[in-house]
Image 1 (cartoon, rainbow, N blue to C red):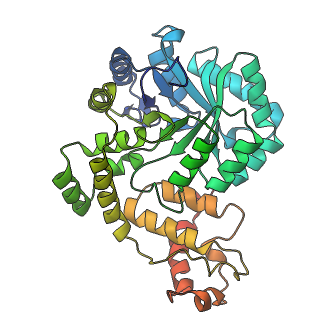
Image 2 (cartoon, rainbow, N blue to C red):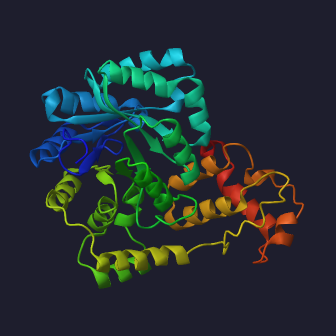
Image 3 (cartoon, rainbow, N blue to C red):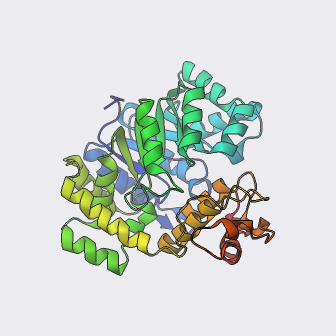
Length: 374
């Protein structure tokens, strides 16, 4: 364990807490936190925007007020939408401390870093401010959560070697997805010797509720539950010291601590099972793009066509928010599907003879709406 204050390899993600109407169910969260801590785990993860601002106060009421500070580890994050200048960062940080009811954060992450956000964080000297807060003892460990390609991660870790930890999306369904680049990003962390926290190991619950064909394959190969299988897959990856689970009820806590308390790494047979189940997901792709990228070289609107097609396929397969997020990442500097001018250069270059112009119209109909933009 690279951080001795952290107990266990399972973290309590506070973004899917139990709700009672529009409020967090504090009684249920208290019961869940008690069970989690009683089994020897102590890592909680929150952010200001989780549950529309209700997650941090829930952590204060259900954890910080009820347990000695040294008995739990707390991670919070600096999110893009809550500051526009360096001068706004410290007041926001102090507000987060107050909302969580603590005097310091064990881990503080630059939230959801991608190429565009990184430029803003640099311009506002957010990394430098966080490192100052660390020197003052208000942050114990400094890191990032990340949503972009390996090249961008390489750049960030090279420019800021002070980063101590990286939070990545890793799950067996899209580990090798070229849009997410889970494997490639993990390899960057390994090269830079950065410990890794895993987010979305169950892909927002998708891998706990497998489609019929995938479940048939899964059940024929293992007696594990789909959720435990997915979490153990992520926890078995190189450099991973922590896997987050956004738990919503006591049953989920009990299941997760049960198999993570005496953690057993993945076997070769389990990796083969994961690949077979992942192959079922891959077969559901709508667009048979081989990602040769011949189509992008001459595009006058600089549309990253293979990435947008991958986002569309992910949306069809998983029906989750991650594909919307990555569409925003891939179009952060322009080149949305709706920008296509119909010149057909891409179709002339495509070895697969795909009707790219029509496919981009379908992608635009799904993603180019205000609530899906970044």
